[in-house]
Length: 444
Ligand SMILES: [Zn+2]
Image (cartoon, rainbow, N blue to C red; front, side, top):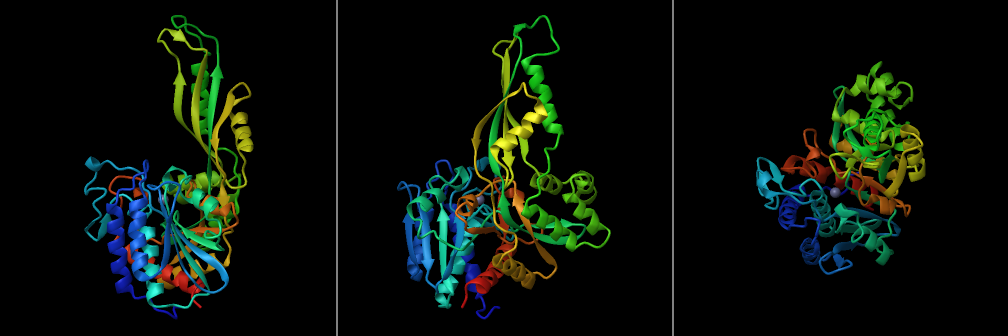
C-alpha cells in the first residue's frame, strides 16, 4: 500500500480552507439553501478540471455530483451532506457560521456533521486529480442537500433522477469513526448498520366524569402507568450481524476474563448484568443497549381540556426505533404485549432500517488503513441508533460504511449541539487514514 504518498501539507491546507468556507455558508435546514455551498464546491472542481454538476429539485436545493474516471471496477462513492441543523448564535462561544480557527480547532455548525466530511472528500479528490493517480474504478463525489430533514430533496431525489450516476459498489459516508474506550483498550466505530424510526401513538380510554370525585382508574392514570412500564422495561433482544460483530470485536482485544464478560453482552440472560459490569452507567452503555433491541421513547403527551373534567381518552407519542431485520408490525406487537391489549396503538411514521455486511473487502481495507495510522486501535462494526442518507443506498444493494476517523478526545456529541467543533489534529488524521483507504480500494 501507499504507492502514492499523500501530499499532506497541501491536502491539509485545502481541507482547512474548504471546511471553514463551507461552515461560513449557512445551510441550516430548514430551509436548507444548500446551493451556495454546492456552487462553492463546483468552483473548486472546475478549477481543478474535475467533472462536476449541480442537481436538485429546486434552484435553492442543489446537491453536487462529481466524478474522477478510472477503470471498469464498480465505482466508489464518497458521500457527505451539505445541510446542517439550525444553531442559535447567542448560545455559542464563536459564531456558528463563523468558521473560526482557534485553539487548534475549527468551530461552527457542520464542523463535525458533516462539512468536515465534505471538505475531506474535496481535498482528497483534488490530490488524486493533481497527482494524476491511475484508478481501478471511478470515484464519485456526492454532497447532498436535505439529509437533516430526511433526504427527500437530496439523496432520494438524486437516486430517482440520476440513478446511473449514483451507481456504485461501495460508498463511504458519515455516522461512524469515533473512538471508544473499554477497559483502557481503544476502538474505532465503523457504521455498518442504522436503525429506522417507527413513531407510534398510544391511546388509552376510560370513563369521563367530574374531577371532584377521584377514581383510581382513568385514561390519564392508565397512560401514566403504561409509560412508566415502557420507561422501565427493555424490549426483547434481537442480535443483528453488526451487533454480533461489535461484541466479538470488543471481546477480542480484551484480556481474560474481561473478554468473556464482554461476550455475554450478546447473551439474552446475562446481557444487562454484563453491560453494567463492563461499561457501568455510561452513555456508551446506553448506546450498546439501543444496538441490541427496538426502543420506544415517549416524547409527546395529550389529554384533557378542562381542569375539573376527567377526560375519556389520553394519548402519548413514542419515538420508536427499529433494528435491521425488524418490521413496524413486529415492533407494535412488542409494545402491545408490554402495555396490554386495551391500549390503542397507531403507527404515525416508519422507515426502513439498513445494514451492510460487517465483513467485506472494504471493511478489511478500512481496518488495515486505520491500523497503519494508529496501531493501538481496533475497528469494530457499529449500529447507529439514528439514521443517515445511507439507508437509501443500502436499500439498493450498495454497501455503505460510515467512517470519519477521529482521534480520542474528539467530542462527537457536539454534532447537533452547541459549540460544535473539530480538532485540526483529527482532520489530519482523517486525511491520512482515508487516503490509505482510497489507495487500498481504488488506486491501480
Ligand atoms: Zn450528518
